[in-house]
Length: 277
Image (cartoon, rainbow, N blue to C red; front, side, top):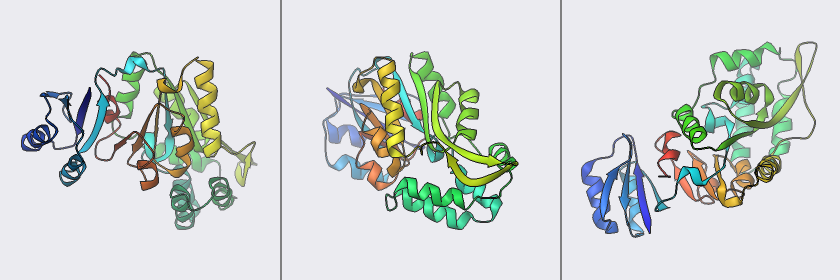
């Protein structure tokens, strides 16, 4: 049996009743202040249009699927766990944000190979003082709404967490300590005499690197693919999302939306929790 989970910043009773009639749901249950569960809902093509018009997220989920049935959550960092693209903000302090942001956007759409796009962006940062990283972390980095709530609930359910990023370890390591994340995987910028050199150290963490990190942790924990939850937003997240039994496109690009099991467009990361009982 499937349930239909409906979420939004303003879920109206008329919209819920209309969806219940459309899907022949047996009942409507309130999950939290933003989410509702329509039990025994039949799949109908019209549901997507109704929800889009009402600015609602919707997802058909197996009845009885529990968060505790899973063992690992893997998340992208930029524009997923946090609200910014870190490299773009660093570039702003260097005076090259438009150039870097354009490369970032093209990479997220899948128009440029990610590794090459990252090399180009990092090269534009050459000469910037290392202190700029701290300034971005302190002054510009914000957590996505619902991030802390989601991670607390997942820890309580016994899940381990992995943060994967094509960005810098400077940020992933601080978020790891701040949020109690179990493991991270990101790129290491080369720094000499207190300034960024415009180069990276070691292998580049791109789409393949993210997927490799997921598989390694999944294997270490003795988990099956079906026990992994993946959350991302860009084209370079597709490889690791394909390694997760439940994959969630979070405020994502079209290429990601069409390749995942669920999409969240209107609520924050707390919306992930509503997909499980």
